[in-house]
Length: 258
Image 1: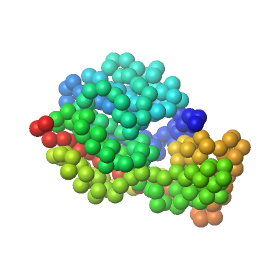
Image 2 (image 1 turned 60 degrees about the vertical axis):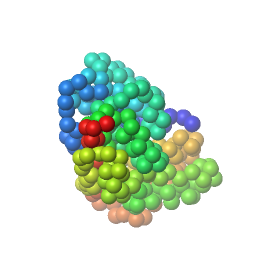
Image 3 (image 1 turned 90 degrees about the vertical axis):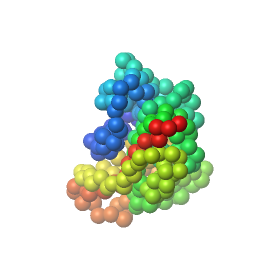
Image 4 (image 1 turned 120 degrees about the horizontal axis):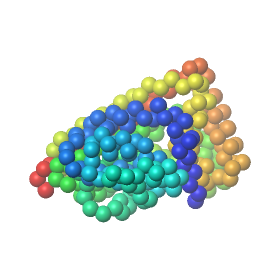
């Protein structure tokens, strides 16, 4: 399956996508000589910011997209490097003082088992910081699923779903896994986009990429057009268009006693 993640398309709405990252960074507490893992690092600009903000000894950015890593690797140096890999496999050596993930875990299944892996790879007193969308039930995602139902045959029945537990479940999970301190927030980020069509373009950079990977170019453009038609049936095209975006931000610190 081809790599359909495009740094240019993703960064077309960089202002809207970046604020949750900075809010998550502010939750991480720096200390000297940290080893940091950034899961789903994308084009690496934000990983570089995290590395420098924490004055980390070493930061490893991991991503499954060669397109993203091609932009990330020129940013390597001074303890920062990037590797190809899948988040769920966590095929990187050693333990980390911080495991960080911004807007990536929503594409990975089985969060309970995943967080158990994270906890096992943190040093005593290590920190976990995660941000992910919490909008599977929104009309914007429902419209994509409805379009996928109409394209069932060329998609082979595939429908993309976000994976995110309820905030209180993450709180319980962190407690069970031995995180002595925690913060779990559900925050709505209010965005004003130029039009409803801009929402379609926003999701071209994330949600719709999995459909692009499974369709030929012409079929994908028809899919995107149909997605836009469904949204126009359900929303008035206000200009600017108000686009509220719910996200979960969570942080936890493991007990210093291993």
